[in-house]
Amino acid sequence: MKIIETSDLTAPHALRRQVFIEEQGIAEAEEWDDLDGEAIHLLALEGDAPMGTARLFVKGDLGKIGRVCVAMPARGTGLGKLLILEGCERLRAAGCTRVQLGAQVQAMGFYEKLGFVAFGPVYDDAGIPHRDMERVLA
Image 1 (tube, one colour):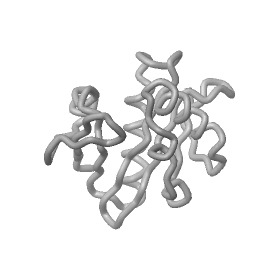
Image 2 (tube, one colour):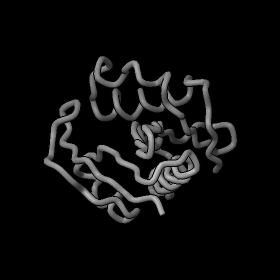
Image 3 (spheres, one colour):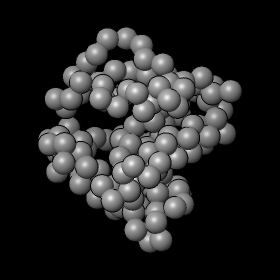
Image 4 (spheres, one colour):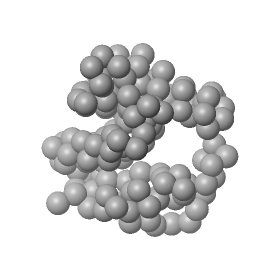
């Protein structure tokens, strides 16, 4: 498995469509926004097959990770962890000292194991309960 940065959004969009729209039932209007053009897109490949994606934002010393998804065949393999760690490393290299994300409440334990700490209230994002989480980048 390798993780690359890509400006071709065909594979990341296909993965997001599969996971967020088809599997989780998120409305297309809520999944697609105007932020993709500003983001750094990570794409995880097994051979030539896209297996996961995430998008990163740099806002001064704050990094943000979002739209993290893993294709069904790659779930349970540690790919989600690799995407988050790679995202953190790239944000650190871009000068970020901390990183935030909006975690689905059911996935908070996953992020806690990677050093993220929840803050603020639970909120609704596309009909799914979320909570903001942050990790300091050493």
